[in-house]
Image 1 (cartoon, rainbow, N blue to C red):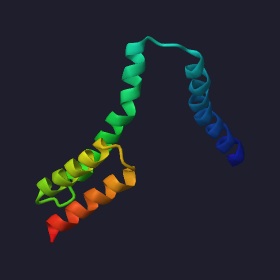
Image 2 (cartoon, one colour):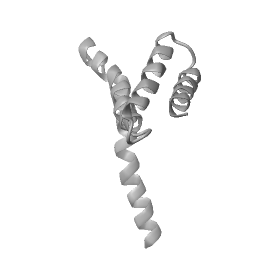
Image 3 (spheres, one colour):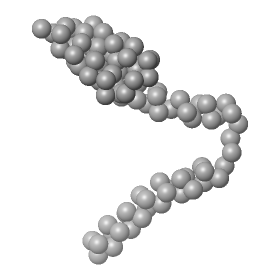
Length: 97
């Protein structure tokens, strides 16, 4: 009975996640909706990262902000994201010495 419950719950969880994948590919949206949908990953990433930036050093949020700004500047030049992360880490490290 437990296996039936687990399998049933997994099906109920997977079906609503798989169906949109097939439906979204076949639908066409106006250009303003496509632009809005394209901005969602960046907005979500910013919302996930920004609290971490502010709490790098809880007493000095400016250090995290400076590290974030350095990462933005490096990313502006379209270099690999690894270099942006490394640049931010080095900046925060140097500011905390």
